[in-house]
Length: 114
Image (cartoon, rainbow, N blue to C red; front, side, top):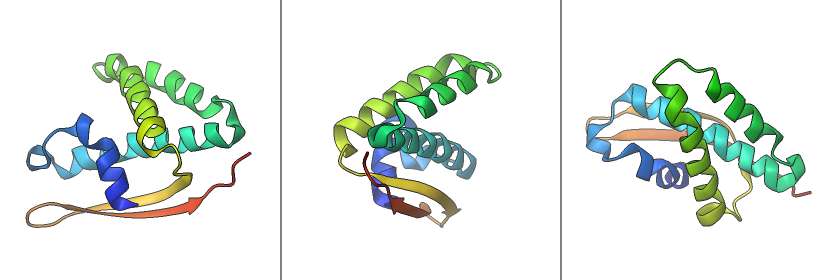
């Protein structure tokens, strides 16, 4: 699941060599929230969690307020297009920085479809 999540967020984050641990953690947090919302939507949630994420994004401090709705939509479309058959829910993750890269440990479970 770790490599899937890195592939999922890679276009938005840019080159790994420019990442910091804080940026990686924040990016993975947002991406995992959207990933889970899409999985729930696919399993019968009817988009309720995505609506909550968008509403929360509107209350974030500037400059994040402007970019978050676009980021949510970007991740939603990417999840459906590239990983639509993957119904694993992300339960948690841990990011650690190594000498040359980052290591991500993901805890996930398969969701039943509605």
